[in-house]
Length: 130
Image (tube, rainbow, N blue to C red; front, side):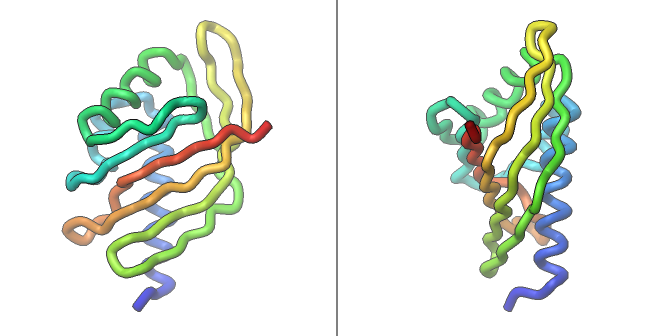
């Protein structure tokens, strides 16, 4: 049975995920990624990336090419079903890439899996909003 505490914990895990992204730090991303497979990501404009190692490498590639990434998360909505949960939200992203400020909106679904009592991100899917 889902409790309000479960939903709050998932929202907190979602916030921790975005702090890891904003930090541009592979070790922080490592800490929030699900340890068990499957782990997947679809970055805006990218194809599906599968496997924990490949997903972590994709984030490190983004971190290496971004000077700054800042997110404002709009209307995060958590849903919990047993040991799986997802957050639907809109990202307002401001980043610096190649010395240029880039802003955009991304419609996002983040899937979390409870592992050893902690919610970890197992799938991130972001689609640009035009």
